[in-house]
Image (cartoon, rainbow, N blue to C red):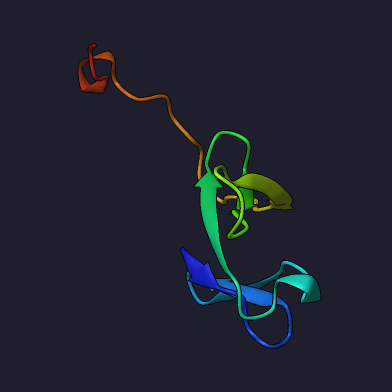
Length: 76
């Protein structure tokens, strides 16, 4: 969870990413999706029950993304 700064950006791992000026001073969820190589940013308004995806930002990795080992998966 991150607070959007006065320039409409959020900082993840010391990098700034534009979210939008309409979200200044609001809190958003940011998830790094390694497989898609994107940062997904979600926002939940005070009068809403669920968060919605507001932005996908390209986040290219310099390393290969490997699948999890089968023995690491949770079973239900």
